[in-house]
Image (tube, rainbow, N blue to C red):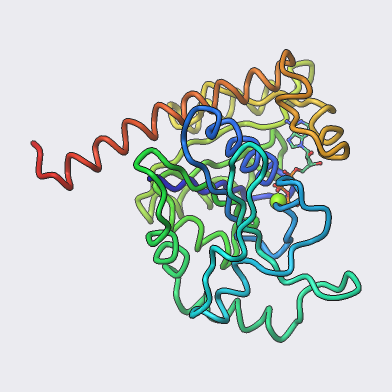
Length: 268
Ligand SMILES: Nc1ncnc2c1ncn2[C@@H]1O[C@H](COP(=O)(O)OP(=O)(O)OP(=O)(O)O)[C@@H](O)[C@H]1O
Ligand SMILES: [Mg+2]
């Protein structure tokens, strides 16, 4: 089982979209998939078919560790398991501020809290956990990064993303994290996007994935219609990009799981 954290140094980079889509695409490639939301936005379950913000989730478990976190998980028709952040209250109210502060304090004091929790999740050898993290820097993103075997860094081709990326990259290097950088929402017709991609290629070298995800207005439209974009528009360039990235991740999961099994078995 491998854990992939989906992070970015700017908001709206596509973390939730890619966490949800890659969970489905990896499930279709026979990887048992769990999508976990480590972000108080509490929107991930909407991608799993839930129409209301989730009440139970990871946040409830931080405060009541004796509970069973699996009770807060949902399963969509394609078999993906979803663990939302939770915390919604009656009448559409957001999380209780006192509780939110208490959760943040615990996560701040125990940076490996999520890693320890996910280590107890019982998924098959080729299973995958995708963690949709809050924007970095944040205590939630640090939890996701600490828990990850692979950090998938989304980079929208925007000046702010470029300006903040070196700090995130330095943090990932300091934590010795294997990282893959993916440009998302790329418009080839935009000169700015072309220039930023060239700059990223120069700065990141082989850490920049060959798979870039093209911008497609069908992505938010599919969410509005409660559809999976890759099923609603399977022949689009963006769906093709997402399939390519999922195939790359599938190969990586198999290879990395094999390597872990060999180490555990004492093979040379
Ligand atoms: N490749 C893409 N092309 C077009 N729109 C996209 C693409 N990827 C994501 N989006 C849209 O961009 C918006 C932000 O995406 P998303 O919510 O997944 O980002 P996020 O990084 O999770 O944001 P937040 O910081 O709010 O958590 C959404 O409306 C989503 O549908
Ligand atoms: Mg999000």
